[in-house]
Length: 110
Length: 167
Image 1 (spheres, chains in turn blue, red):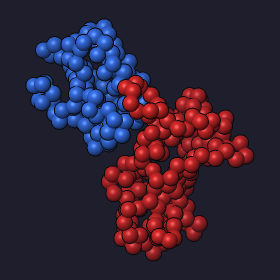
Image 2 (spheres, one colour):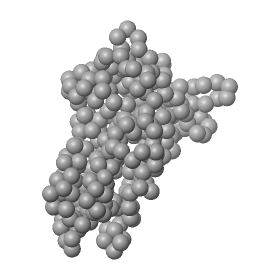
Image 3 (cartoon, rainbow over the protein chains, first blue to last red):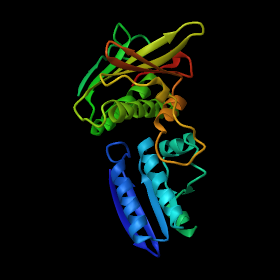
């Protein structure tokens, strides 16, 4: 799994690739919470288009990111969900809780 | 990690041993091996003829169950033994073919009360793994025998067994 960040127009976009599971979800959580709490960028966007699989620990990291953003009145956006990622958010009844878009253009235009 | 499998056709195009064993994996409790097991389960469920959605369901259930063993039974220790055993299952009346997956570990006994999973009406991180497992599989059972935790999961094929095709 790899994660990198881009910054533009008061937005941070995290590009994530690979599977998110117990082996690496702490890295996602750490990067996400550091960005939210230290930089307080108004809009945090997760590009998950190259993430094929997310487990429950990965979902938990996304929920922590969402809650941290809400605490600071920031937006937290996901885009590019794979079928597997969409399924776990549906199973956990979180799909409607997150702001989700199909692609980066839609996410940034929102 | 040790792997045992057979490629003997069984008349339905499925690889099988005479006792129904399809695949056995022995691994250490290292989260870095989760992707290896997922890869094996993805291919096995494809070969058995599960739908793409059911392949993902079975793979997710096994991954979440292994994650629970690593986190809660072995408390993050990386060198403890886990076995994943996959067998063909044929249930008569009505005839249904499926896949039985048995996970075994030598961690402390699991409190069955903790196997219920949490409610989903609260937005909070954690506690979702068991919910994913129960939603993904047709049967989920836990047993403790001889100092071994045995977590059994079954997923049935949702089409006639005669339609199964090997790769």
